[in-house]
Image (cartoon, rainbow, N blue to C red; front, side, top):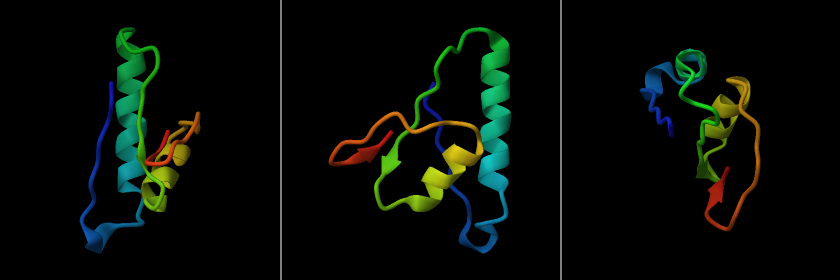
Length: 68
């Protein structure tokens, strides 16, 4: 599973992406079919990094292009 999300600028920062990602993770783990979700973003996309962290994901690495 590799989630993706986008939020309209006028509602950015209200926690909608975090809430949606948390719900997706709860559902995915609940199916019993997902053991390790994977997400990545660019180094300069701090908002997306925060969404992942607030949703309970943890950083496992980075390379020259992506933050994992």
